[in-house]
Length: 135
Image 1: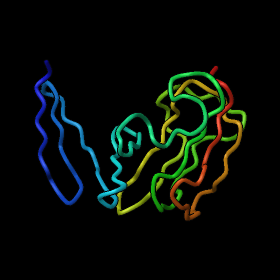
Image 2: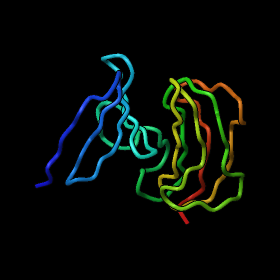
Image 3: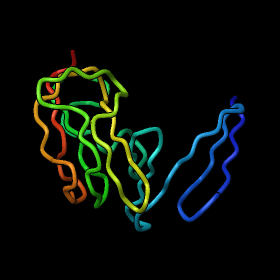
Image 4: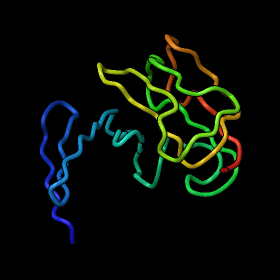
């Protein structure tokens, strides 16, 4: 079993060490709607998968979309419609609460549509990018 150590390093910021590897995890939101940001992915309670993934299953085939996890400003749009992306590739970078939040492709796919632009303020659950079926 992996040795896990969690250390609070600031308001809503935690250092998680797993077998000597350190990761930073951000946790925010009201008690009844917490979310965590780790490794370019957003998870919401209950932590049952990638909460920013909408549509098809996070690991399956079918249309999917990335949605804003919280009010944020679109800092960078890294893709255009028709682009092919690999699982884990950053497609949008948001800025919220003085931190950058890269949103990553949940699977290998083709970008169907981009519904935001740099500098735009987006609200929680706003769909930012749609994907066609996994490649």
